[in-house]
Image (cartoon, rainbow, N blue to C red; front, side):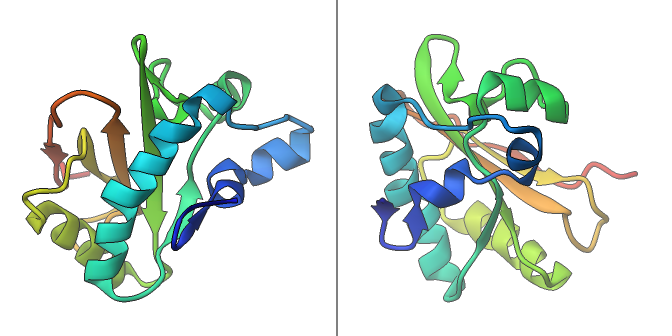
Length: 150
């Protein structure tokens, strides 16, 4: 099922860890609209600005999967921010300079309604991945967390 032109439900639910451990990592139906909005309002504009495919290293995570991989207890990957629906994607590209570019472009799209944009780990030259999140029905926080050093 397509959430947007270039992002599918299967991509956001996919997890090698879940497959290996036999965990059912399926997005609950009531969260689907929030993830569609994330795909249309956050992912697609970034992908359009980049002009090429962006890989998803992590999307939706059920509570059990999030716990097993060491995700934060309030991770928006689980689909909530308190009692509000949320969504989070970890964007990745095999080329480090492209990960840098993805972060810089997303940061520069001043109208993009994200909740957080985080340079995750890596070096000053490139993040290991880019975390971007969305919260449904609230004004975007637009918190940007750049490289924080080793």
